[in-house]
Image 1 (cartoon, rainbow, N blue to C red):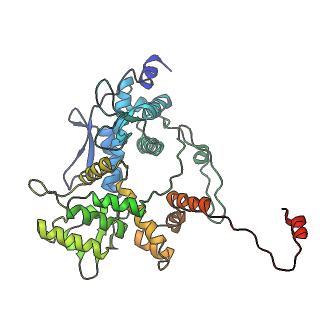
Image 2: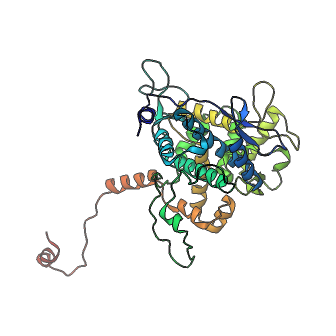
Length: 398
């Protein structure tokens, strides 16, 4: 490894934050492009256009654009053109992602700096080092797909700079009747820990709900925990999507983009009515969730995330918006009147195995049961009458 790459990995040289992901107004294809010095990067735009024409979700196109922008920034540091990249440049990308501060992952996951989580010299919050393993693996998949696309047209390097796993190189076809054989991780792929769904216990949920200061936010949390809808799905609801009579909402599923009905609790609809009474009832095509200050605007995912950050700062917690979906699933699983296939339908899981993961008990519940086990008085053994005491002592001990 040359000196320049070593200095990048050691943090002595910062990767410049050049370029941006820009959104284009419909009906432009693709919906997102990468701009550097206000000029569209043609190789990236060609690839993103192919994704959009393949019916990829605009959010997926946006995610791919951010990964390719990071790749372009790393190439700019070592002054390598995209069509001259090698595996050593991909190794530099992985090493940089493993060590660079991630601005989206504060150690405290709170809006205000906490003691011990700030830089004593600058006063700025310290950031968690490195991107998540799943983020790095996703970046490798995106860069690999980018070069595979251009190889079809004879552009770029002759070999894909992202090394493929041995299983993929063999291109073996797996029979669904045979069990999945364990596969080694491909080169540069990160070890992803198995994630256990994290739901909010009832007591902590009540504390979180009590921090909400407006009926809009109370309605949102009540719908999240009763419908199991994803954060972006619920925020996209319009006035025509509210079915008051049947107590349900119509949302656009994140993956399939199909319109689906999700249930809502009576409590959620009560808070929704109070919110409408305070801020006005939206029209059929108007968003239900709007900002409270200034001219009403649609409440975005990042604005809702900011609401959660303020609540976490008050409670000293780190709950996320996706924890609401896990909480709804855990509550449904614990209801004996609901079957697992029914819960799968409500949560819109493609496979039943995705729903079965919620059968695992929460660690908080195990702690409570163990404490009861430790403090439960031990009962003295009893024996049927007619046995001599010395015979019992001989067989079972004193």
